[in-house]
Image: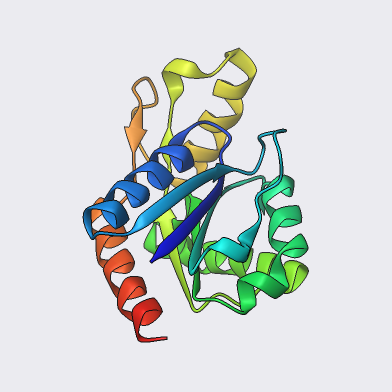
Length: 178
């Protein structure tokens, strides 16, 4: 099966997730093309793909506009093939805020018209060592308010890699059955 993984990333965690997903699918014997939706290169044509996975991170309660435009522009093709959505956010990392994370997904799908067969909420990462002073202050305020971490000096990854692998295996079973 030929699978497209299109992604949008702000700080790099979603790219890491997309690359890990690609490696997992390749390990299962499938051809995979990675496509960064922010890349100004030639647009990707979905006609040559049997299935697709879109991964996007959430910032300020919204998925990246470039990923929204991609999904909206290709919703007819996406809806006609097995497809899955990976939504990456800190809200997905905490049980008490998973409802917020799901609301972000619901809003994204309503706006784009895309109806993926499966969705997965994944925790993102905090990269304190890469933030400028203002980013760091904003993130610290949000993180401390929500009680995500008590120490805000070191980087922290919240992605559940086992959940991603299980999700991809289930997606492959769904896609191959179709």
